[in-house]
Length: 397
Image 1 (cartoon, helix red, strand yellow):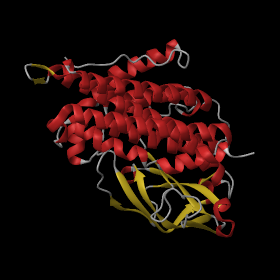
Image 2 (spheres, rainbow, N blue to C red):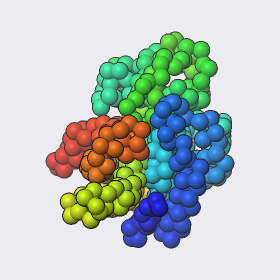
Image 3 (cartoon, one colour):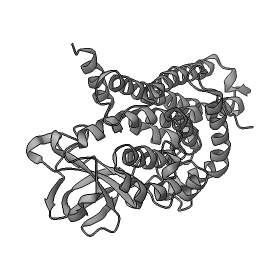
């Protein structure tokens, strides 16, 4: 019998309705998406039915007003849904976050009404897939300062030139929210955001990247070569991309915590199952104190990280447009994702240890989770950068 840990979140951070939402999401995602894990890991393809199904069930545009086709939920509700989706299928969880949090939310929070009405309904229905184009070959943790992609004004268009790398959903995206320097002389303060549609001349997917984990969530390299984008597709005002990026990054870090927690909770579940059924020396290995100690440590790490994650989600509620990237929320989101990533790595390491030789086999679920979880200490800012953010805020006057 498969172990499913209770979904209960810390009661002082979630409402009864949010808990019910988590329970409903858990049942749906387990039924619809969990069985896809092995095939997606083998093929590294996302089934075409996934996004329409998410849209049909109201799991896209989670924080978007119903006026634009969204679900109109609060941020914490989006987080509990992300956790349950990642618990059932981490790769789909990542693609949903890239679509909904990085692309859709940034358009909803920062674009004018015309752009919202043009693009959000299709994105919320799952008819369109979204991505965010920020990271570049020479600009990872220093994505803003080292950005080389440019956008020069030419009549009624901006002409984009540059390359984006490690873009989740990039190979399948219909809409990419792209950051480019409109005023290179201003450095990081001269960045603007643009909506670029697939099929636009000069825009192409250079390659689909072959990842260690999160396989089935497609990641790619995007190239812009004299790519003409209408002036009307600029999101926000010229040279305001930093504010959009930084507030978006804080929300990204907050919700990635729940991507991590879904993975960690699933690893604990299958470790409990294995410990109960694996026999050594004539009895289940769950009867050995060292295995019991590992399970206890795993549970404790998850609960500590989860509590901080929920506190952070609560702090993100109502984050105003352009807010973030500084102060308490910037420090807290960095701390939360730092702890969530570290806790998940700890849990996955112990999960493989409990599974023993079976955990080292590529076709096991615990091996897939282990390969997937490693990037959580790298993506959305490395662990080292997260520490710099925390200490930088602590040392301010």
